[in-house]
Length: 348
Image 1 (cartoon, rainbow, N blue to C red):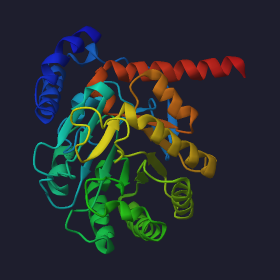
Image 2: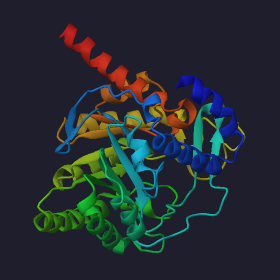
Image 3: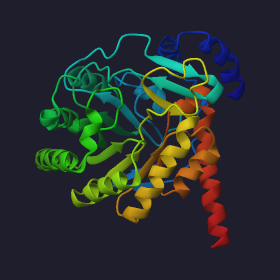
Image 4: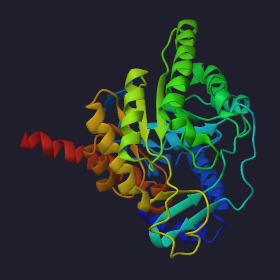
């Protein structure tokens, strides 16, 4: 597996990043159709219960890789414990013009300014409903670009209603840096109002469908400690089921000197690791295990995944690390987490 990706990576990196992204997913689909997914997947069982769900292992796919739910079967076969798809918005929107995805290989980073490009919730659900899913599925949802913040809850509720029969959890994205004004929804008052409305909608849908879909919240890495604690207080009061920490950062401190390092958008990859881990630590100290945390941002090796768990995460997600390391990163993270747990058990 390592050799295969080592051979493919130079060819993929010679292409425009967005073109390479699409080609990689198409190749994954072809490999899965040919029954070759087992060459990549190493299914290490390490069950975790969080948000009322039983995850076969704690390593998940972060939102943004499969934006339109078009590659669920092939991604599931790679050995992830869960997939977070999307983000998706109620109405289709093209996002920002290309180019809108940039590699910063010197820093093992990506910058994206997709702008929540989406096929819209109806096409997204149509794609998802055609798949006989075997993984735990979450979907990242957001508001349309032209929806004012005071009507944002309408968009989140519309997505939740259409997705409800098909998913295990939904993540409220209030932290993308590429939709103007979206991060204002992280302010305590606006956030409390949004969660309350979406949670009320969830209660009605729960009664209608006879099943529960968990609600998670995805926050930014560019918050100070006081802002993080305020979000934790709202999440506790409004009974959110999980918090994803974090989205991409607008900081450019560590990449300004590199080609493409000054491009606008959200920065992910290795430079995000410390920022996202800091947010996890503050959340963990504030919440004391009351709400499960999902650690994402800068995981490029097994030790990085263990670091997130040590900071308070129950689950982790990867995305940029897949671009730089390939599918082997999944099993590497699972093995590192399992080994860390076994080591702790022996020393306790």
